[in-house]
Every structure is written in structure tokens, then in C-alpha cells.
Length: 123
Image 1 (cartoon, rainbow, N blue to C red):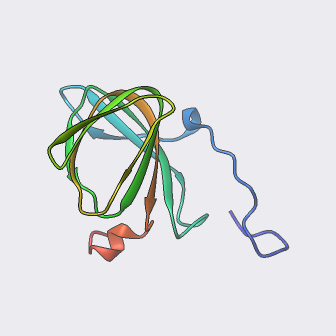
Image 2: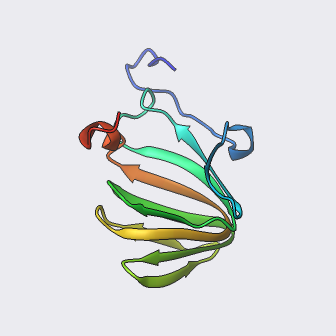
């Protein structure tokens, strides 16, 4: 996507159902993640969707993350404490938090910085 005449990116509308999801967990269960806004669109924040279907995925976040649930219930354990996030709720997770993603949910996420892989030598 190239900048318009004004030098800024055009407005972008994304339908989660049309994205290419990559499997990130399971079995048991399944977990799927899709990046919705690429680095070409915004080098500052990473935005995407995920669908969790009973998989449990442990991770230490290497970025600040905001999760908002669209349908279902996302179950997180963050620093050993359980959380249930349901539609209309969101959770902010600071960099360095140890967590386990679980549950059955469709949710959106925002991470900052988008270049977290490069910053941690993973790219």
C-alpha cells in the first residue's frame, strides 16, 4: 500500500474473515493468528486477530499488548493470576509479562512496538 498524494497512508478497512491465519498452538485445541496491519502500513504498531479454540500457549510478551475480545471468552494466566476476558472487555499487558493464552475466543490485538522481533534479535 503506497502513500496517497498527501504523503500519508490511506484509510484501511480489514475484515478478519479474509485474512491468512497461521496456526500458533495445539493440539490439544487450536490457535490461529493473523496480522491485519503490516509494517508497510504502520511501522509503529502491530494489529491483528486471533482465534483460540482450546489451545494453551505459554509466552512472555516482548512488547506492550492490548487484547480485546469480540466473541467467546479468552482465558489468560498472567504472572500466575487467572483472567477471563469476554466481549466488550479488553486487557492491557505490559512487556515482560509471563502468560498462558487459553479459552475459546475470537479477539483482536495491538502490540507496540511493531518491530519487537528486530528489537529482540528474532527477525
